[in-house]
Amino acid sequence: MQAIVINFAHPLTPAQQARVSDLLQRPLKKIIGVSCQIDHQQPLTAQVVDLVDAVGFTPADWQQNLFLLNPPSLSAVAAAVLAEVHGRAGYFPSCLRLRPAEGGGFEVAEILDLAAVRDTARRRRHVS
Image (cartoon, rainbow, N blue to C red; front, side, top):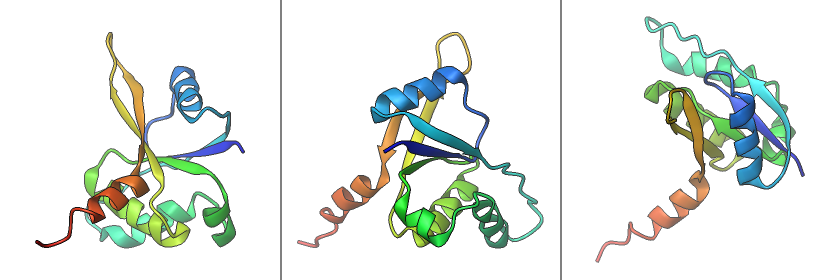
């Protein structure tokens, strides 16, 4: 199965796309770019609903496609996008983590499995 990248950040370079494909060990089906223009004078929640709607997925698409997110760089927007996507998909998606590259720009450092992060954290919530 091929993967879809939902990109809420800067466009991914061909090198970044190749790295994502290598990390996934599968080809990318497509990259859906969503422009993340936020009006900071307006409430965020409705704007994030519109951003996630712009992906164009049906309810079934959210649950049946292999996708990962390149989240927005603004932390509050990223948190709200993750919450909205979790609500639609029913699970935390995997996300790209980019880091500064030697010589400038950014490289794909890893793919974060947020569902695994959550599952591991749940084991730490037991009160002794």
